[in-house]
Image (cartoon, rainbow, N blue to C red; front, side, top):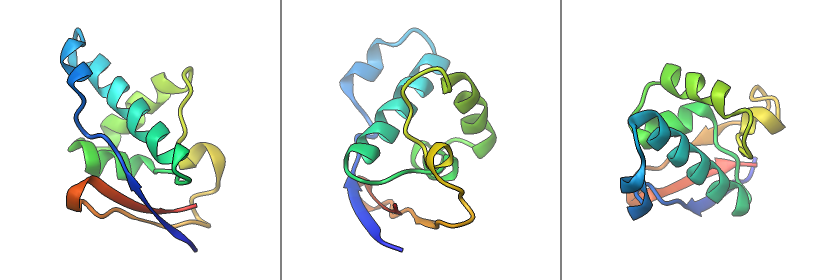
Length: 98
């Protein structure tokens, strides 16, 4: 298992332009998962829940809606039983396996 350090944007000033909380959550999930993917990592729903301060149930509900957009989550690419993820909250850096 290779751990890959990535830098992600937890807060973006564009986040202030959204209409409601659901739109904000979708925008942040999409941005964070795609930033990790472009750096060679895939995040789990649990990773996103920890990073965004949400429950995994909330992330899973949003993920169902987000299936229609370009989303790079590990659950879409690999069987999670074969891979493990370690989230390091320090300075918005996530280490995850690919």
